[in-house]
Image (cartoon, rainbow over all chains, first blue to last red; front, side):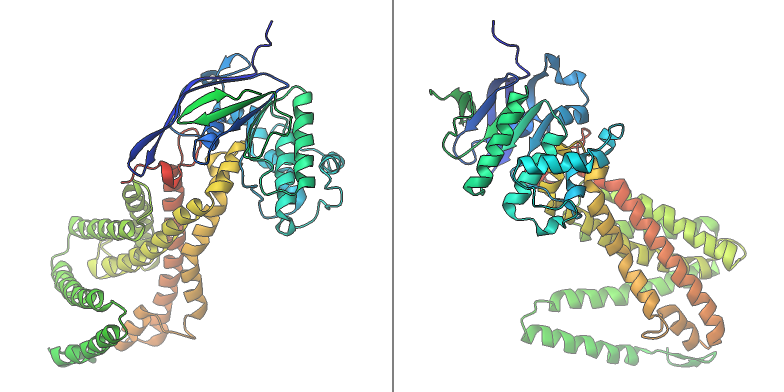
Length: 225
Length: 269
């Protein structure tokens, strides 16, 4: 028996204004993401990979189609709650002014998590250790982080917030090999703990994804392994 | 239209013409340096003549025939025109900003003006045009500048922060939480000119109202009292007006689900 998908998308359609009229960026895209699995989406630049991730996170106005999380339709889940459970990490790490600690506990400063307790310093340090950022002090000014450090801090922040599905937009683009390997390991650990992952990637396969899907011309196809 | 009247030296046509020569010189400089400002400068000069002349005539007539509804009607026209100017100065603002600016100016303009004329200066009757209209003009003019600056800044800043806003929303932020840094910087931008002029007043420059009263022969100390009231009410009107306008309009850039509508997704107005 196949495991029931954690995240399921049926017949997603997105039309965006283009240079010469509206363009169907997603034209009937369906996708299933079982828990514990990493799914890679590849395709040429501008083919709508980031648009697909945003649609899955319910962060794209005007997107049409059916989304199910753990069998529950999107309409039954409040958008903010959905985004906490299906977490998108955009390509560019958003680092807010303040310390590394401020950035890591940012989700708990928001109303959506007002009833949850932010992780303690010990937990934050352990999380930084896991992505080889043990030498980064929690009190360090976030302005002084390198691009690679900022990307790993942003990923750590999303993982700490414990979503069920991670949507990663080119998580290892612009990273050196060592940083990319740590991001890969963190993603692997997230999936091993039962989470579902959708990654948009340009690089060649890192052997982590169970399936690779190719998005072009608004439709999604399986890439033969 | 020349000579002295009641101690005031009246400006005549030839003095006006002499003053206009300075603008002509500026226009010549603009042409020589290819600044491209001469047309705007000419239009602005003609508008200054016509609008102030019309104001003089209207004020003379209103002061002679004042009724409460006439005074209120004039204030409404002033507010509507200011909202129109704000709209023109915020080309990136979303639809509906006219209504928000009009409402913000209406509330702050009317409240501040009538608190000053009714409670502080205590004019009688309450609609006395020679007090209400000039004071409303100062309140509306300054809050118009503050609101226009704040609106221009908030929508430009939101666009500049679109990637950060997406990341924050993805973490569960509400539209308010995602927009708050832009809102704060916009309100500071709207209020800074007023605070700066409050700091420099009396030392670097003599404000228009006080200068006018002194030129008209008033006791400088009596003029000081008026000027302090005006500075404070302008600061309050600008702050409250900008706040109402920004808080009342930033959500137009977000969907009901709290998602920021980026440039590429907008249906242009």
